[in-house]
Amino acid sequence: MHRSTSGVRRACAVGTTIALIGLTTGLGMVTATAAYADDSTPAVSAPADPNAQTNTDPTTPVTPETPTTPAADASGTEEPGAEPTTPVSTVPAPSTDPGASTTTDKTDSAGKQAPTTSSTATDSAVSPKAAVASDAKIVGDAKVGSTLRVDAPELSGTYEYAWSTDGGQTVASISSSYPVTTADLGKQISVLVTDGNGNTATAKSDVVTEDVAYDTKTTADAPRTIEVTAGDTLDETFAVSTGSGDVTYAIGYTDPDSSDPTDPDDQPESYLPYDTVFDAATATLRGEVTAASTFDFTVVASNGTSTATQYVEVVVDPGAAVGVMASATDTSAQDAFDGVHPTNSWIIEPNGAITTISFPADLDAEPIITDGGQPTVQQGGSLWVDGSPVDEFGNSTVDFDDDGNFPMATVTSDHADDQIAWDDDSFSTKVTFPHASTHVLTVAEDGLSVSFPVTVNPTVVTAPVAAVTPTTAKGQLAYTGSDATGALPWALAMLAAGAGLVGLRALRRRTQR
Image 1 (cartoon, helix red, strand yellow):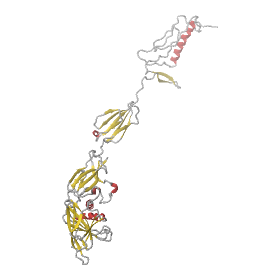
Image 2 (cartoon, one colour; image 1 turned 135 degrees about the vertical axis):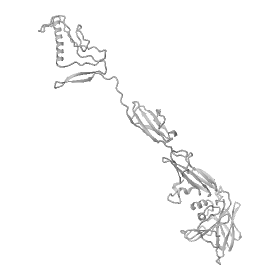
Image 3 (cartoon, one colour; image 1 turned 180 degrees about the horizontal axis):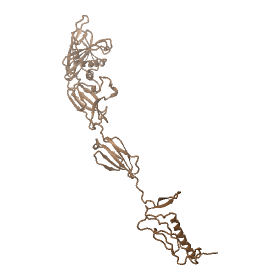
Image 4 (cartoon, helix red, strand yellow; image 1 turned 90 degrees about the horizontal axis):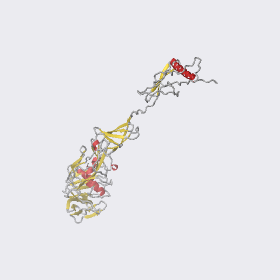
């Protein structure tokens, strides 16, 4: 078996190295050079003979080691005992620069060379992702006393909040809510939300307003009560205690369900105390009150974004009694207003002045009201009489007692044979006149009284009745402060219900309006 000597092997190694260098040079292939810092890393060689030399400069071509023994002849015969030399690697050492890249030349199908670049290392740090801005949403009403909350659906992780107002200080916060105070009134509230990645979301509220409100809560069952006496002057203000913007005021119903806004006589203002006026610009009720009664209404405040209602009850008490006001009618409660019998009624005021009211049998006909006149009946006929102490404005000064009983006036006659009895049907005193003549009746209560004449005509001979000239209702009723037409509903109520004068003055005044 033929064995090669060390000299032959070395000669072969040198020849192989030279051939490789020539091949790469002839084909135009260049070795890729790695970018490196000032302190370059030596090229790494493949395992070689310990006696082989290593080129430390990767840019310098490798020169084969000069044999120490004669080279083999052209026939390639190795010299016995020669050791082959291992070629140094021409692959450059990896660069320590993490950002270095390697450029190589590749030959395409047309034989042209195209340089390509490939990364040799991965950056040690990843570039940060750009922050993203999005819209947030403020939840809640921008009103004083409310709490706003912000939602930022595009963000994730831990949030930071920066709340601010127009021209106000930005306050960093970890809370997603913001309590609105009076200091924010008229401003817009803004919020900037930032997550852990630096992404942001912003939102802005509407202009902060404040609901109108009264300082004390009222209801229909617990109204604001104002108590005065007939003859006093009201000057009450119903302005709200809080509320932004321009506030307007209007009168409303206490019980809308029992009211009819389509009725001209049933408007909210008709529930105000008589002879008073409400100033909507200042929310003030002014005027001298003369009718004793209870007046229920509401004051409604609005600023365009909210409303507030104050329930009000004005109690007008009667003044001191100055006399007795009496009434008399010539028809029983059963026959009055039955559509068959005409009815005559008279109002006798404390000073003795009389107003006559004639009701035709036709219920559709208007009553005739005249100043003056005198109660008149036929012999054997009757009058139903009632009366009550009143103040200077005609308000009854008596009320029901603790047992629910109403004190009644005492009726007397200057004729002892006149028949006087209480009539439960009409809730009044019935006086029957057996004899024809002029009788004088007196109605007294609480030490006060009023007297008036009654003409009793004989049944046999038709006696003339004192002439009463119908006139258009005009003038003032003494102690009433109202037109004579005001007596109509008062008399109607007495005739229909027989309830005397208590509570009827309010009806009289209300219908008058």
